[in-house]
Image (cartoon, rainbow, N blue to C red):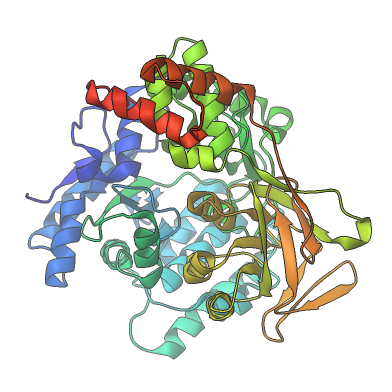
Length: 553
């Protein structure tokens, strides 16, 4: 197959295997007339060609320049321009979603001159400098390989909670110089002042990130083939850090833990999307949009409704709003845990959105295995070590591990619970080894929460009173200190973290499960006596598939 660069337009007919799931979803959003930033996508075949040859394919620079030129014409901006600069995001997008496992570079194109131009255009030097600093740290980390811990020191004291023009300019300027000096001291590659070179370097970094250890580990855990490669989506930036009427967030059309038909998610004002998914910032519930930005809230509800109608399923979206204008950056159906998957399938069948046969095929025996969610029974207040947000249902009991490496080491002798300030893709091997995860920061869409749900492991995030000292190997909360290796338990529904091994109870089955299994028994015309719930479902699915039925979602 010949590799190509495709515009993100409603007319593109290529599949997710060619465009990647992210771009394929964006094309669908365009067809629905929903607000999507303009851009283009470099197809997965270009990545496969890069991985085979170790270099970008022949003619790549010409096609990339043409795609940038077309985007400049649409936006009436110029990449790296001294007036009306075009600033872009560069994101990975495999055929199958791999959240946080590959590289992303935001605010690309903000050369020194373009940063000055952005400040002049917006009359807001603080915003332009904050965006430049975000670009430099992103490029240094993802393209030049500067470690997060090394960069963290340069960002100390940078206040991103205020978006008022003129605030924090001296510290932002100092941090920019610190990052630039840090990169220069390392020798080797630097951040180009040529925006076209920035873009080519970022694309190369995204392609290369397909084969990082964390990405390989994730694929092995989820049975994703290693030869698929990733697409790269390049879009005009929407700035959630623009002003007090800007921000970013994630939204589910239904609660991903229960399946309840209410919008669920989190929002962060005055910030960019990486602040939400990294788990480093304190987010607010999605409902805060209704009070602070009612027009954005109304628009988001309309988007969620349209997407459920289109996909005939619960949906997840990532969004940003700039100066009160909403933009959708990603969409995908689900994902849902066991209880939620059953409720949504039954609710959609009751509404006539899907048929009962399709409802049965949408729920897997794996969902049923997690349906009767374990919960920690009532414990004495003194036994509770800390509380956070339940991010992935279930109970995990194990010994405290404060780093991903120690989680792998300790797991050889029994279950562990990974306890971190927040997790990143670099912690993937520890998350894979652990029975559950607890983080001090982050919300329901943070890296720890998303990965825990995808792995089917209990998780608690945003335990605000929790301190993790990885250097000395202990965790502290509420005046109590627990050394690494201490036995704890976490409840991914209530958010409780308990010292020791508490008594665990199991919730009863929901009415929706009984109805779904009744439908399954109708298909097989068998009596359920002696068969487990997953066996009853699997038997009905086998009949449906023999008769040529399949999901249509």
